Image (cartoon, rainbow, N blue to C red; front, side, top):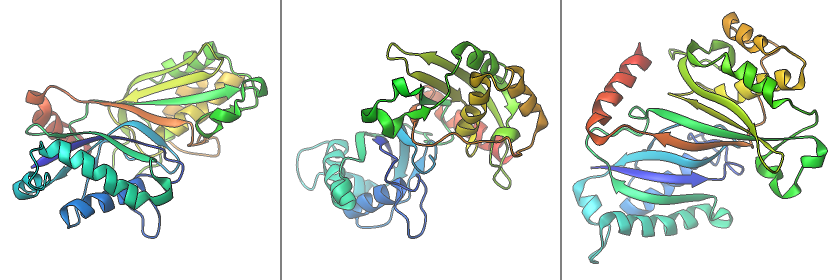
Length: 281
């Protein structure tokens, strides 16, 4: 039986999402907590792996349990297995996290529709990135999730440069390639907006992201926002199809996975098969 978990986490104390020997990761802590419930190791599949220090408000994972494991979660009480699992998993997470209790929170557990795959069924992922440009906007209470940038940034220039990267493109220049994986992605949104508090929030949305892609896009855009490079420079970088000394990653701590979108239940399987075929190709 496939189970969907919707969760959020503070990425600061973790070495990223994915399991790493000898390191504390979000996946490691979550799987440790699940193992306390079902008394065996269960692997989870995530919608989008996040780097060390990156946060999530709208992360999605799935896992597979046997029918007996699912129905046994209430332990004889008159409870929906999803409700029972949510209650027990919160306690197990507290045990696994110790002093970091609250750094990972599961908000919702549901029995997934047929064909659901947290990774391959997703239509798009949306990230946000906060930038305080100039010391007058540096709020110590928000320093753990905001980039403190010394130079003033021009939002209009940022958007002029960002708009030229939209669409289906090969983002080799803005990715850390993985062997055998494609760097072709559809960038659907890349925009900057200055809020009432003066802080700039970037929104980056794509069908999927390759390794380091969001941080590389933001890092390069900052050169344009400062006026060091012309807006067209970002597109020129895209066409180069290579990483070099000018490929700079923005800091990870202001980056938040905000939302993952999925199609209707009837289209989940077809979407997963389509995405899997593209990735393999």
